[in-house]
Amino acid sequence: MSVSVNIQKKLGAFLLDVSFETEGNALGLLGASGSGKSVTLQCIAGILRPDAGRIVLNGRVLFDSAKRIDVPPQKRNIGFLFQQYALFPNMTVFRNILAGVRTGSRAEKEAVVRNALRTFRLEEVSRQYPHTLSGGQQQRVALARMLVGKPELLLLDEPFSALDADLKRRLALELSETLGRYRGDVLFVSHDRDEVRRFCPKVCVLDNGRSESVRPTEQLLLAPETVADARLAGYANIAKTERAASGDVRVPKWGLTFSPAAAVPDGAWICFPESAVQVFPDERPGTIWVSFLEEVFESGRRLCLYTADGSDPLEPIAALCPQEPEKTKNRSFWLKIDEKAVIVLNDPTHADIDFPKFLHKKREDMI
Image 1 (cartoon, rainbow, N blue to C red):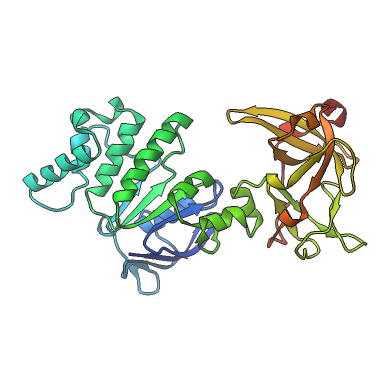
Image 2 (cartoon, rainbow, N blue to C red):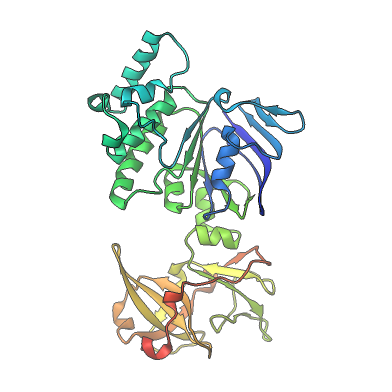
C-alpha cells in the first residue's frame, strides 16, 4: 500500500509544490497555517485539480498532467475526513453511513451499516440527526461513513482543530482505536506536533507551499533541520548567528557568545531545547544576565526569559520550567547555554523571528 504525490498548484500568489511518498502507514503533513496542507489533501482527493504533476495510489494513476489523466473524486476510492465532518444535516445517522456504502444490494448495504453502528457504538443514536449528537458521536459517524466504502487511502484534515482540550483527548483515543483497525495508508494533516507524534511514525513538513523530505517523526522533534522544522517541533529558542573575532559564535539578539561543539557557518541559524538552559544565581564565565516573566499554565509554572542588548524592548531568549525555583526568586539571574545541545539549522535566507508583542517588557518592569 502506498501513495506517491508530486504536484504543483498555483492559487493567486501562493504556489504549492509538494513531493512525498507513503510506505504503508500514517504519514503526518505538518505545517503552519497557510502552508498548503489542506490544499494538498484536496488535490489528492480530486476536489482541486493540480496545474502539473502526478498522483499514484497503489499503482493506479489518479492524476497525470502530461498524460491528461484526472480520475473523478468518486472513483478515486479515497476517504476524506473534513475538519467539520461534513455530515448531511437532513439525514439520520443510519442514512449518513448508508451514503458511504458503494456496492451491494439494498439489504447488503443496510447490513454493512448495522455492522458499522455496532463497531462505532452508534446503535442507540442511529435514528438521530447530526445536530443532536455530541462532538464524539459526530466524529464516529463521519469515520463510519468513510470506512464503510473501504477506501484505499484516508485523508484526515486536522480532525481536532475546533475541539476543546478534554474532548480532543477523548476523540484522540477513539481515532487511535479506529486507525488501529484500518489497513490502508493515512495522510494526517496537522499543525500540532503532539498529534503527529501520536498518530504518525513519519512526517513531512510543509513550509510556504513547499514540502521537505519525509523522515521519522522523532527525528524531526529531536533534530530539526530548518527554522520551519524547529518552530513546528516546539523550539522556542531560534536565532541567527555571526562569527565573532575570536572565532567563537555570537548571537547578537541575545548578546551571547559561545563555542559550540559542532561547526556553525557564519550567518547560520541555531536553536536549542529548553533543557539546554542552565540557571545560576550569580555571574560565571560564559553566562549572561536575564530577567523573567512568570506565566502559569495547566501543566505548571513556565518562565519566559529576557536579555538586555541596550535597546528596548528586550527579546525573549528562552522558556523553561525551573527545577530550582530558589535561584529565580529575585526575578533576575544568570544564564548559560549547554553548547553541546545547540542545533545548527540549514536556513540561511529565513526572515528574522517575530515574537509576540505581549512578551516585550522593559528591564525595570522585570526586576
